[in-house]
Length: 271
Ligand code: NAI
Picture 1 (cartoon, helix red, strand yellow):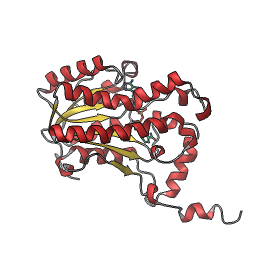
Picture 2 (picture 1 turned 120 degrees about the vertical axis):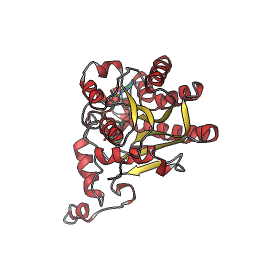
Picture 3 (picture 1 turned 135 degrees about the horizontal axis):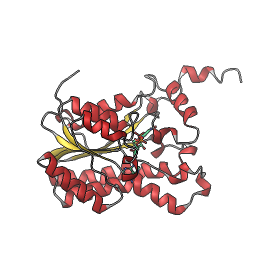
Picture 4 (picture 1 turned 45 degrees about the vertical axis):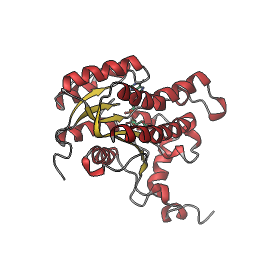
């Protein structure tokens, strides 16, 4: 394993809720690779407490911020800049939540206030994080900003309901702001489209186990685990990927370009 890929880099990691979170695993690896960073999560998630253990391990602090609030993001960046002693090289947006999914609403029966909430938390917050970063001029040149997406942005997964639309918006924002930040500061913006992963956000989706197993059988390499996703994020924060921008990068064991696998065909041959 390469060492010190992120030596001298500083940044912000959102979304570490518990040890299953993609952001949690990313924080551990970023620490291992020499990065310094501040952890943040919504105030309500922080009351659950686990993130403080992660902060101790990573020798850092936690600053609560609701990612839908411009004021919270400003305060987060200002305090993190003071703690880290300078501007940022990376930002991880690892945030997703849909009240409609939580309450089991189908795509034809969405509550529109909740749908707006899904979009704000899961996608527009990505725009807000970059908007505030631009206004505060807080990114270093050749920095890297990442969000996490899912293939329901391109294809229909009925149980993913309004999160599918949120992910399509998230990926679009990565392109729109990627152009802008590239021109302004040579900062790259990308999303990783991750395999189904057993986290709080993932397992909250109706039918998760079925599409987790289906994707696993469909992918020649099997589903990509959260830890491997963290590895990919680390490479995207490192200087080895400086010219990759405005991309949605599939990290899915080959799922997105497989038509059908032998294992799945076997299940249909005697019908
Ligand atoms: P997770 O549940 O561990 O992380 C989601 C995080 O979003 C939590 O830490 C939660 O506190 C945070 N959050 C929710 N509302 C917030 C707000 N208003 N302000 C700040 N933070 C807020 O689950 P996971 O899977 O690690 O999710 C991370 C990202 O990966 C999400 O964008 C998710 O949609 C995406 N993803 C997950 C997949 C999966 O199957 N688990 C597959 C593809 C993408």
